[in-house]
Image 1: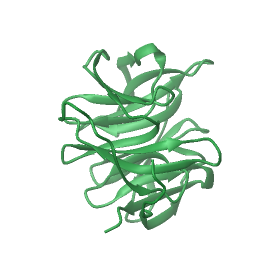
Image 2 (image 1 turned 180 degrees about the vertical axis):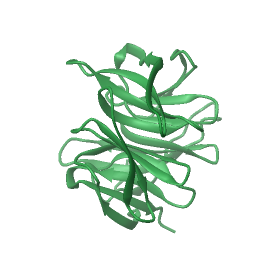
Image 3 (image 1 turned 90 degrees about the vertical axis):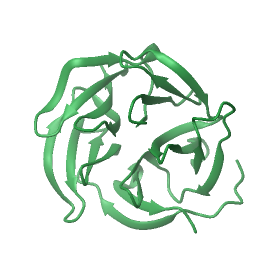
Image 4 (image 1 turned 30 degrees about the vertical axis):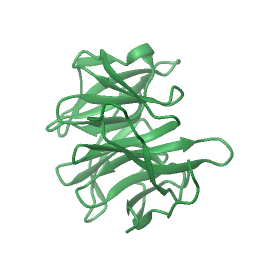
Length: 220
């Protein structure tokens, strides 16, 4: 990846309502965040920056994505941090009814195209398209570590780079409808990011080390 890229444009930076903000999803005009250290999820009204819902998670909430009424979380369970997908219904909480093991019990960030869930695997530098049972339908090779992705207008926007040597991340884009995938880097991230979501106008990510949640846009 080239470093001759413009920086993203930060719009707002908020203090996280809990330490180590990790999972992040936009649903129904609200932001949902999962704290890695406290193992809890929070519904946040972004207009007032007040928490309107808080629940304990069945493990470490590593990632989240809206799937309509429900929010899907990647949860790390047990001493080995085995990864499973769980559903969360706002106002009700987590359900064990449709808990699904991630492939090889690994995986982190999530996106959703309206039909399928996409799960990224950090160390394997890839995104997996899954069916409803968690089986792999397609593998998208990204060529770098992935710390977030989201669908916008049929395209996947993703954060890719490396955690090594102080962390270096770029905002990239690909069209999963193409037979030959081409990942295009668009901008450099200005902070070590975790998770990616989109509210219809701005992207959001966590600056976990600073206990901050940041909205941003791409450079013009």
